[in-house]
Image (cartoon, rainbow, N blue to C red; front, top):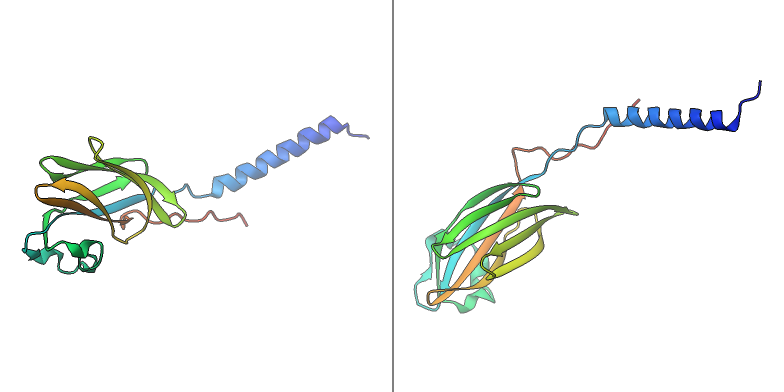
Length: 167
C-alpha cells in the first residue's frame, strides 16, 4: 500500500504539533518580574551644613562630582514596588515628583525610565540590580536635588524557573 505525499505531510504536521503541545504543557509559566526601589532625594548646597547623618554611609557624596558641595540633606526617602511595565510615583518635594517606570530586564540589568515632570528630567537607563545610581541637576532653593536610586528584584517574587524538558 502506497501513502501519498500529502498524507505523509499531514501526519508529520500532526506529530510536530503534538510534540510541541507536550513540551509547552510541562513548561512552567514565566514568573512576573517585580522590583523594589529605594529613592533618596538629597538637597545639595554650598552652605557649610555638612552631610546629614542619614546620608553618612554614602561614599559617593565625598567624591567628584558631588564633593564640590558643602551641605547635603535628605529631604525624602520614598520606596516603590513595581511590576514590569508599571509606573510608580514618588513624592520628592512639594514642587517635584519622580515617575519611575520598570520597563523590564535588559540582560542582567533593569531597564528603567525616570521622569520628573514637567520636562525637568526624562531619561531611560539600564541599571545593575541592587546598585545605587544618581541623577542630578534639578534646581532646588539655593542648590540642586540629587536622586540616589537603587532597585533590585523583589524578594517576594521568585526568579523565573527554566522549563523542564519532558522525560
